Image (cartoon, rainbow, N blue to C red; front, side, top):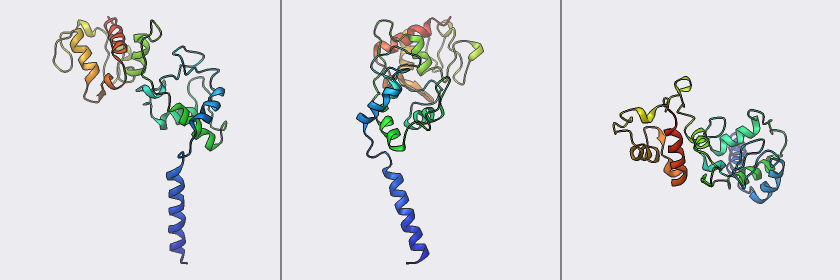
Length: 199
């Protein structure tokens, strides 16, 4: 067998290993592994422990570090740590890590509004805070939303009122993802209420 043929077979075998990585991941085993995370994170309720609840982890647009809520970014956050959360790079074997990620991917519920469980401010931080600030001092790429309801027009040229702001939030614009895919009606209204409070 020529050297080129051996190289091609080895490369094909390596590709197959990469392509099937995570294929046999077991969410039930991942749930057992999550016990080590449960001291700081809940996943059945929205209540915060030392760290945020993960009940809606993959139902969010952004993570606490501002990155989009994708499998890759969740993996990176766990591997590298964030804020006071330590790195877990050496805590799990590769197959255990795949099982944990499989379990975390089941946490994809949309945040709901149950009394004061999820406040509009928390929704703003999770869904809008990556692009919008709450005052001039922390304005971001999407600008500050402070005083939005004291302005005459929105970025789409429509008058500022509850209906038009709600429609803009739900439909999105430019690169902004609409909340229709992420929040239920009650949560979107709670978010609207918080934006209205930014005087």
